[in-house]
Each structure stands twice: as structure tokens, then as C-alpha cells.
Length: 438
Ligand code: ADP
Ligand code: ZN
Image (tube, rainbow, N blue to C red; front, top):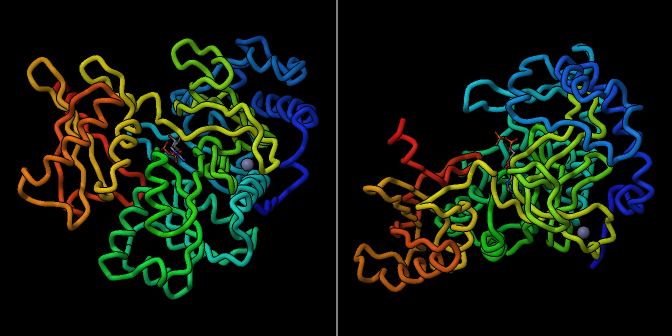
């Protein structure tokens, strides 16, 4: 396989060479952080008054974790480390729970982020000849703008179509011979259904790749998308607190996402004890920014669960890989005492070719017990209103779920297009028990 690098030197550097610059960058980051109200207090409490107090990368452990709540408490300026005049952009999180969080970027920050995004898309083999249709939402959400700049830097023709308006997306896809898509996996499933309705097949399009991210999805969903569109699908991970897309990306081998370790220090911790997990074990990802000027973050707890591969990648990049994100620690459902992540349910149902493009997970109280209902769309031609026709498939779904999550769900089948579709991140889980107790 042909391997393309955007920045071969940095991407393939020996990790021991990188250690020196990482330590220097960490010290500089701490010095900048000390300029913020929040970290002046936090680091002061930990007895750190200068970057020089950090003698080795291992000393990072002296620094307390930073949480989403910390970011909220520092809103709006408590984490700003440069003069406001030097800020060229802010991204503000949706703040569904009330107080939003904000990340500031200086011109240099945007430049560094763009570099990471350029590296990321190049790792998949995409290049300046590509036509890149960016179906992620542009705006306060980082998904749109993040890869936009990276793709431009690589020299692709970028179509900033943003999310939604599926008919227009399809027109753009056809008229401009789009070769690379960027979208949430749930939106691509929806897009495929609309294409199929209009009689458009992969042969009518010029697509070769898609980058998918922003929400958990299973390997089965990737395979499904690859088969539907006859393309390669690459996993892309990022979060606004660490810029957005371009934190970790799959290369042509599609086997875990390379984390750009010259820009971030990654740790994996036990989400309950806060201690590092053993190598290769699953845990919560924690990141420290090494390059960011305007909003340095130290040991930020993402709540995202993943694990680190221990083997080097055949592509030659020396930046470690993480596995597919299982979900967020706060996505975990406890159903009749059993801990379940929605991604486990997705994995179990998306294995079945009869299952269509959309599903929902509903949890309710049923007397003293919890009841799990899985609502899944079924492909046209297979769906029948007569429950008896669907019984064989129902048994397969129940068997798959029972063997993976040890719970027997209620299974409801629906016609394709029945369940609602979100433009951005899909809402899959409806936990009605919370409303019952509210
Ligand atoms: P919000 O926190 O409001 O969802 P973000 O845009 O910062 O806004 O979302 C980042 C989060 O999205 C990550 O922390 C992670 O939970 C999820 N995410 C991003 N990329 C992926 C991916 N490739 N796979 C699974 N989850 C992802
Ligand atoms: Zn690789």
C-alpha cells in the first residue's frame, strides 16, 4: 500500500526524539496556563509555580485533572491565557446542561490545528485532487470548520455544504463529482437511503472515501457504509476542548486512530479511581494540549472510553493508536443492574444485514424492573406489518443482544425512514426512567 505523509518527519519521528520537545512544550504550556485565573489557583494548590517545576514528562502526574465542570466554572474568561486581542476565534459548546464551555484560539492555534487536520486527511490517502464535501455542521460546533481548513491546506476543493438539506447535498455530490465526504455515520446512513430512493447508485457518483466521527459507531456500521457507498470509511476523533477534529485519525490501514502525540499528551485512566490503567486496557482518555496558546488545558478528562494499541502501525507513523470510542462514561446505562453502553447494542444489531439505517434505544420502568426496547428500521422488502413475518428476525436480534449484553430486550421493527433523523449527532438513547423520577 502506498503511504502518504503530510509531515513525514514529525509523523515518523522516533518517540524518544519526540520526548524532548514534548517536555519543553509541556513546560511552556504550564507557564502559559499559570497566566489564567483558573490554573494559577489550581497549579498553585499543587505546588507548581513555573514550568520549570516539571522535570520530566512523568511529573505531569503532579497536576490535578481538569474536568468539563472546571471549564464551566471558568466561563467565560477564566481559562484565557492570551490577550483578547490575540484571539481570532472562539468555539462555544452547546451547553445542554446550562453553562456553556468556551475554547479560544489564537492565529497560531488555528494554524497548528490546520496542520493536524491536514496530516489527518492525508493519512487516509486523500490529496489535492480530491473534492471534499464537508457535511458536518459549520458554526460553534467544531466539526465543520476543523477539517475544512485542513482540507484546504492540502489543496482539495472544499464544498462547505454543512449538515442537512439532503436534496441539495445530493445535487452537489453529483454536479461537482465529490470524492470525499465528511459526516456523522448516522447522517451517511440517512443519505444513502435518500440516494437509493432517487435511484442513484454508487456508480453514478465519484466517491472514494468518507471521514466519519462525532458520535460512537461500531465496526459493523463502518462495514455497512463501505458496502453501501463502495468507498473506504475512516474514523475521525476529536473534541472541542482539544480543538475539534484532527486529534486522532485512521490511516489507510483503518485499524485504530493515530493520536498526534507531538500536539497532545494522552493518558488512559480508570474512570473511577483516576489511576492509569494497565497498558492496552480500556479506560477514560485524558489529554493535555502541548501547542495551544489561547486555552491551554492540562490533563483534561474527556469521559471518552477507549484503549491504546500496543503494536506499531504498518504505515510507519510512530504516534500511538486508539481504538474505536466505546462511548462516554456518562452514556453508560444501568439496566436491571447490568452496565451497558449504547455502542454494544449498536454492534449487536448492525451485524444483521436485514437491519436498516436507523435505530433507537428506549429504557423505561416496568414495575420494579427496567425495560429495554430496541426500535430498529428494517430494509424495504424485508419489512412487514405482520408481526409473524418478522419473528425470525426478531429472534436473531434478541439472541445477538442476549449474548452480548445479557439482557432480553423488547424489539420493535419499523419501515425504513420511520425513525427521526438528526442533522448532527444522532440521539439514539431515550431513557424515560429519568423523567419518571424527575
Ligand atoms: P459535545 O461535547 O457537545 O458533544 P464536541 O464536538 O466537543 O461536542 O464532541 C466531542 C465528542 O464527540 C467526543 O468527546 C466524543 O464523545 C464524541 N466523538 C467525537 N468523535 C468521535 C468518534 N470518532 N467516535 C466516537 N465518538 C466521537
Ligand atoms: Zn497507521
